[in-house]
Image 1: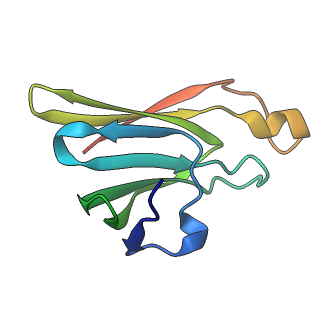
Image 2: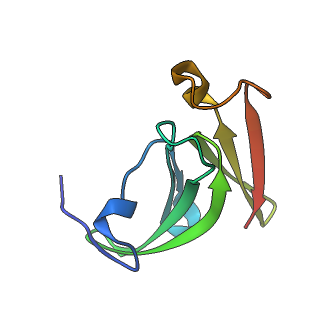
Amino acid sequence: MQEVSISGLSMEQVNMDGISWGKDNNTLYYASNDAGNPENVGTVYKLEFSNEVTASGTIIKTGLDDTSGVWYLNNNGSEYLFVCESQFGALFGLNSLEPPFNIEIVNL
């Protein structure tokens, strides 16, 4: 294992739940799970690696509810992230189960 130096994000923002690797662009996409927060504060991030130990981070999307999974797709040059909003916080009484799951499609 290597420690990675990340610019552009605080260490609190490097809290990964669901991850997906964009191998063609050396990019790791991940979501932070906000299941313990009744507000919609789930966030999707991007880490773009310039080498094996250095990455630059950015926020892709905010305002999501209980983000728990991310899947990257490159379809003939069009890039997308499929983000699962699992509504897991409903198990703790923090929000309702409507809809029980939602897939947010983010066009990159």
